[in-house]
Image 1: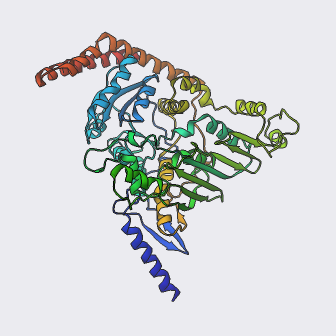
Image 2: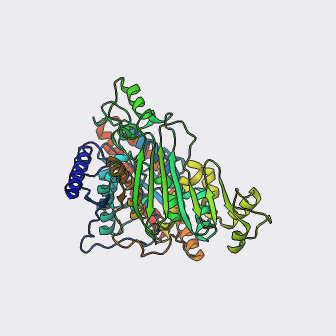
Image 3: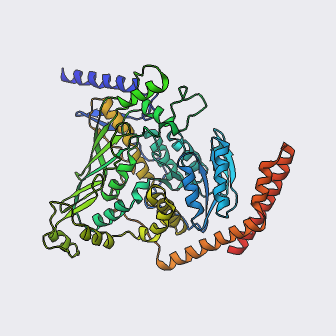
Length: 551
């Protein structure tokens, strides 16, 4: 009798799950799972024959990194500015649904003396950009629903990818990006800028040096009331957003779960060596009812909203293979102070960011890890004094912060971590090193949305993680940043500086911006064609001069 009851419950859950997938992008219609002892087991597909993993992938050095940027609304413009300040980078192409937004970003290149970039626009403009043979990296900062779509197009056209968060919205997209990266042996990096914040980077160094002992539990969150921002999110004019809610509010209405998990999870996953000695195995997710989200839609539409799918606050608990625990929270609705709640609890110490930032480590543990306590009665019962903390941070300052931190603070962008993320990406590509985050990080961190939705749609049942590495999660031992030797760095930097100097010289010599302006000012198609031909000819001459000067 119990057997038939179990089958009935499983079938009822399947029907319930299936009925919710119609308009929910965070749920994959082809995700395969089954019940096993009260747990939902997500199946991992076999790696296709002849396909090789990209763990530790290091491509040949790129003397110059040629970039095409797609999505120039809220996040993209900052990336254009960052790349225009990094030597050895050429922004080749700019793309946005709206032509004027793409053209506007060319002014950032003009300001910095760089050559104008080609402009693409419209719903499919990214496809032509991805086909260009002179692009090494496609940087994606579109709305969420287009992140994986553009990334797949780029990978299929042989381009490395840097994709904004969340980079994939469901398991289907996660697996597609993993398989394309492996098939083509290309980078597909998740652009998780919070991994480059000062506290997170210093704390990671401390954790790796054993300051906190063994990390047993970690917390991460994205708690950010978006009431002041909902109206700024792009409203797709193609009919997919008939009530013009804006893509982010619409997404929260139609999808359930922690749909923006990576800010909180990324730094935690690095500290816990996820797929580098440990892996996330099981999660349980719970959410509150929707109150604020429902009210937002009703206020905008003037109609009752009975289909707001995401709860106001979502909590997810995750257990790892090595019996560590991660807690994540997501709340973009309610009036709370901004928090990413980054917290590490170890057997010998504690680190916390938001609302109080600090470390708790006793004198005995500090001494055991080679740190001389500045106070005799230092105790882990409270946060260490400022003087002690400052000394600890100085000792464990990240080489990445030492290299890029000063300029990052001047440039800005979430306190400078956006610039550090871009600069570090270029550093790795120019020096032929593995990137800091790979396609498996992307898939693991982005899978939280669908896995959590499946849990909640089935009465908060435990859900297992698929293994995106397909059995290789223990191949690498410990998370590490890769570095070139000082001699290699010096050579790379000299070559990068020479390229940018030559590019600026050629841009001025061949009056590329005057010719670019002539194209925009042309009054007739014939005049525009003639002006474009003149610009193309001058661009070719400029490229030839740069190549000659830097060979």
